[in-house]
Image: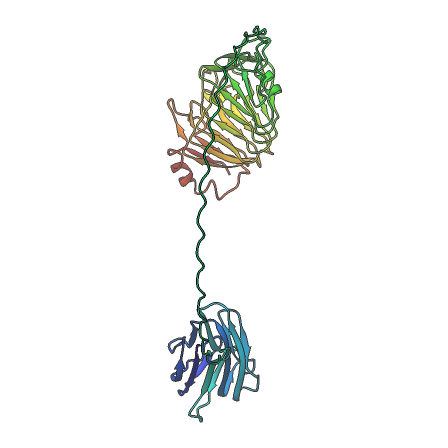
Length: 430
């Protein structure tokens, strides 16, 4: 049976501010599994139970807009307000806190605004009493009655004799094995069905079904057959392009194998990427002569251009007179385009980034071009480098920021933009 009680009082004068605890400096009585910390005014219950609080505080004045308000609050969310008189007089409160799980804490604190002054004319400024009231008294246990005598155990009867086991009968003879029947004819070998999520293309193949054993002959056939989310595997070979290849299925990957070469042989944009989530990886793309078109045009969201080599035929003279051929162009509706680990060279520009398009251009190598052109787009450039021969200097830029491009991040300060991209030459035309 527990016996928990605490009585504490405050004898010193002073001021208490809003939200502060009443600091009782004198412990009159403390018994059982309860403790009080004079430095903080916090009471700690180390045993679950129901506790009755009775307290009063004497004040003589206060600074604030409200009456002098005091309340007992606990770590369980209990709040026991006292009566609310004027700012002078005795404030009294009582209540019950049911501690469900120990340890738990409680304190008497000032809930008014401003400050209140303890009464200076009284020797005791505040008193608080806590008593556990859920103690259950139990009467004494009565005496145990006498145990009755155990009766005698009866005798065990005799076990009867086991009967004899009968003899095992003889095993019969095994009958002769019958003749084996004729073997039936072998069925036809099944076919391997094409997998629409893993399609294969081999330059020059004819009559294929898209499997690795029987590939399609053109990239456009592979795009037409692949399901959204699948991969078109472009096997080694040379792929001439004279008409545009439209890639408009979500989350499709066009993956080039080693010794894959795509050659543009007409003045058309060879790849138009629309929709969302398209990836072009591991392709080598060029043209037989310089055409005034980009090799790839992006529209839509979340596309990736990764680990490709894109270059044009060498053009004579200063770059200002070159045919305007580019690695890729972003339409204005492009968002989150990722361009990473590619090589671009021998073109007018690696890319032209149109207004309002967004994305990241990371760890690419660019040389023998006039550099990236940013026309009102928002792209993060990081880790890009400039090979040999360096980009042409007649426009003075590895990265050109045209009029209308935003100031601030991710382009400013331009010194940081240069340092983060192998000391790139920046042409700031904003």
